[in-house]
Length: 149
Image 1 (tube, rainbow, N blue to C red):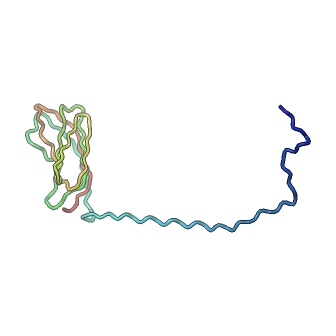
Image 2: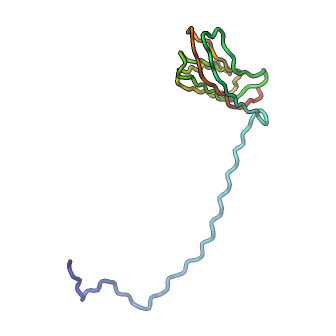
Image 3: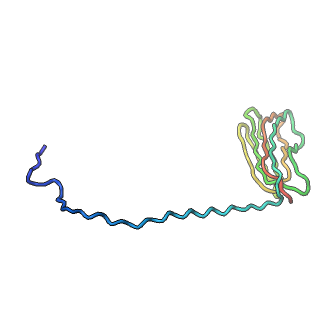
């Protein structure tokens, strides 16, 4: 390592007296943020009636006609999500018909789950299968709100 030469200073020269720094004016405290305006939701009925319905599906041998698992009366509809699980032990798909403004078919293969969300739902039905004999095992869940028509 190279030695420093004593005749060259390592620090800049400081001349005394050193003046004191200029004081800055005080900073005012920050103003708090304005709270957000709450989002207003409009519903057709107040309060809406919640739907929380779950059940099991077990069909053996033959399904001769559709099985309605849930329906509403004339003057009400629902905004809901329908979820269907088909067990791995089922021999075929489970087909569910959701009746609303349009008719929607949910087909769930064995070992899978499918969901469908819609408004104006009137009924949910298990459709008949073309296979015989058949073994269908699964679960369904309907969650949402019933609203005026």
